[in-house]
Length: 217
Ligand code: E4P
Image 1 (tube, rainbow, N blue to C red):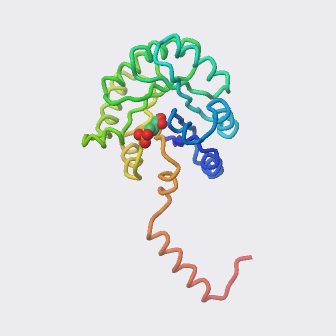
Image 2: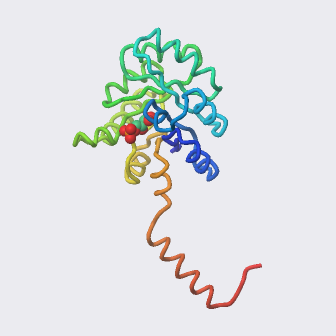
Image 3: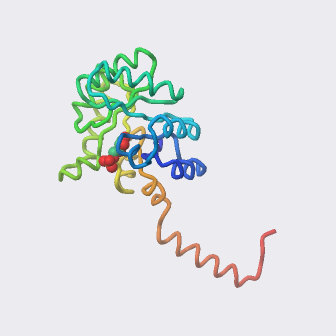
């Protein structure tokens, strides 16, 4: 499973990229707002750091507006994936952008049938929002699982990008289901390393090592 980092924070991206953990980046208007930067500048800087797909989202809601904005966003770098919402105009834009050879991430997906439409529109990525479904006391991962089955049934090439990931367990579940990508906040990516027994084990190994008086040289 590929890891995308779900942030527009350049420091976070740089740090995780240095660890070799970043296969791509997803941004959205809220993350751009949080970064405090201008969308074109911030996105360009992200693309300078990360070679994999970097999702940049249109904010127009009509087809013509989306296509105009997509042209501007695609001009930032070769590795831009245009993010469009799962609406009728968004899916129409998805099809047109794919015909132009652009990568497209269809976002704000909350059901398997929406994901089926995105695949039929030729989406490169479909982003089911797991955490936001869980917030409604429903099961977000169940939707990812349904999408996996449907895409495998028909051999759709659209990659499942599990989004709105809130916990380490979400990452594990996405991997068990076979999501192609999980887009994960930096905090959760770092939490994947953590285990109390790793810390405890390291502490006791180092204490015993000290007692030997040896060095490795
Ligand atoms: C996906 O591309 C979105 O940017 C993101 O995963 C949304 O997550 P949130 O529900 O935590 O805002």
